[in-house]
Length: 343
Image (cartoon, rainbow, N blue to C red; front, side, top):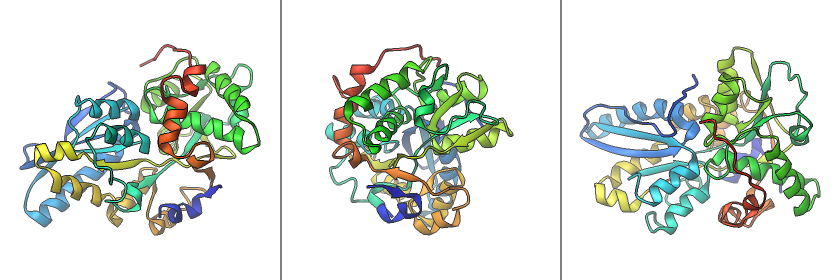
């Protein structure tokens, strides 16, 4: 099964360097507050969304609200929430399996997918390539990443949602062309051999490529690629491979924490806001493909039609993909060689 981005709605209907995690209170002293633990590239997205929600909430309820924001590699963030190190009221993470990991700890209700619109996915994305101006190495598709002397900047699949999706997309490319799992494993191993280091998160990888001028190609979220190119003033370009993965970032409120914080109503209102037309327009403007097909269609010029494969091409579902590829003794463990972080 392949997914065209023009039909994706029907399926579910400035560079900031620094620490792995940043937390901000965006509304000063407010009557209520929640913590949104998110994945690495969403800094700018929620910097735009949070004040709009806060103003809307105050107008509707008369109450002021502050949204604290935390960012890092998606899988790393999920582990912090699961272990209680981050007392998130809501999570907005890069992969459904990251939320499922928190659910398995009993912190999120098993019905989290059905209690919000569009399977709790306010936006979608995929994995693309960023190259230098003029694409001097003629990098056009996945096999070009493993040509001699090509250096690939790709995040660590142990900590980053971008890293995991890049691995799954590369694997899916081989399978889509009739290759077997041995061929896919060999290709993925070669991909990591072309990576001089493995950044912990997507933004760290983008900084290394775009700002520090390291590597020849950055394997990135589409929204990160769009941001990098926009900010490069012509120094970078996006390359869309022949096929990539249908990425499904997902959101949920953390039942155990909102009960403790007495923030359940606010947390739900915040996440439901993400599905409103107003928020969906901001989501599109920030380079994410909105789940609302009407809003997506209004931004068709920004988002070209793509051929994507769903996770079911290479695993039963996201949970199965997590076990098959990223759990202990999974595919990644058989080919993964720890490298410097460059954080």
